[in-house]
Image (cartoon, rainbow, N blue to C red; front, side, top):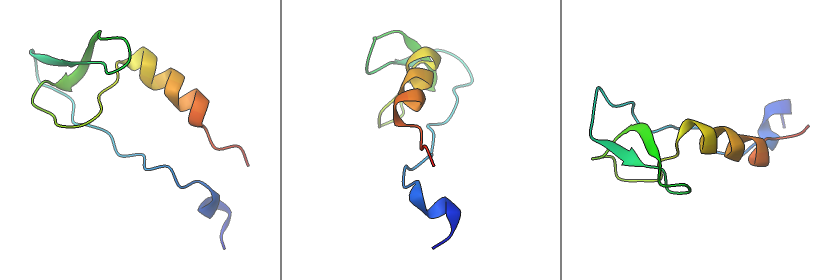
Length: 59
């Protein structure tokens, strides 16, 4: 087992939109930088940062 096997969080991100319309953040309903057509969880930069803080891997 290598040192980076402990973190199992999938770090894939939705694509960044070229312009409006933007998808709403699933937590605060503010516009995100992701296209409205994206099917999946979208977070605004603030909620994305806060979620990363909550789920950060600590070795």
